[in-house]
Length: 347
Ligand code: MRU
Image (cartoon, rainbow, N blue to C red; front, side, top):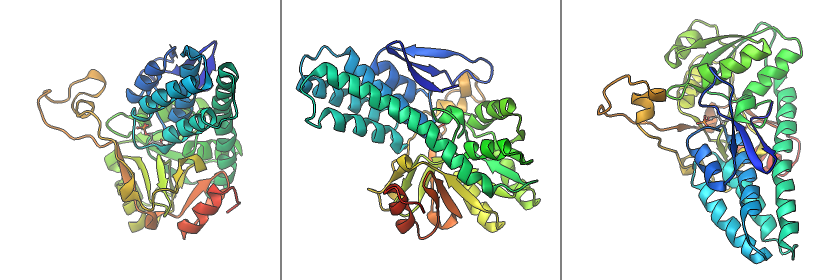
């Protein structure tokens, strides 16, 4: 199962808004529709939106009437700006757009159709690489989960959040596939409920033992001594190891330190943004308050009640035990280990 793929000239993706009740796909035929599907979270999760944006760029190129490479580059510039504006925090989106834009502006093409073909192949490559990288991180990270452990997990970082396999949940999957027996506590992850709707759906299919818990119960289970390790994903990791992830990650990290529980993020190098020296520079997406007051159209309070809805928070690197990348598990000092991981060295 791929969360997003190219099929017959369109971008096909799982509609993550209707899971776990229905497994439905949408077919998108314009870059505007791809940008909207990222914004409204039909597709979500940093690597999945990166791959969607790459296919969106390829789609923009196919749809453009441009006769020359220069005209096509202009059309791609517009498409890239539209896609990047859809969600600001996950760097994979801008990373994927920039990668395709660089091809368009490389000066290596003098025929627009050749460029269109290469852009589609590049988008496909981003999607294929994501699956390969995730299974590599899974294999590396599985050693962190001991037999009999209880893993605490936040949001959804599985196959749905990536093209396939997952990051933090990919580690859970790899440990399960290697025959380890362990249990997973899934934060439900308000307000969009990625933990209860999506992560539980994935673990049901994999046959991994789990319980959904209210986000507010995480500290209780840590205090009870039930949590062996916490695994989360990341939307953007700064050069010093500070990282943005789903709102609620920071409080887990602080509580993990108070209870001496190992705390790891699992992130491909495409999520590492060496251009930012620290987490305070990462833009945080503020979403519609209606997601808090009226989740999925179900009013909890009257519509005029006030609410705030930051979608991500920043966890300072001092709370991290390590960052699982496809090039090894980066450890402090992260300024050195992340630079080496991004350069392709084993860390
Ligand atoms: O708002 P979302 O659902 O896109 O947020 C997703 C997360 O925060 C994930 O932890 C992150 O993207 C890493 S997923 C592999």
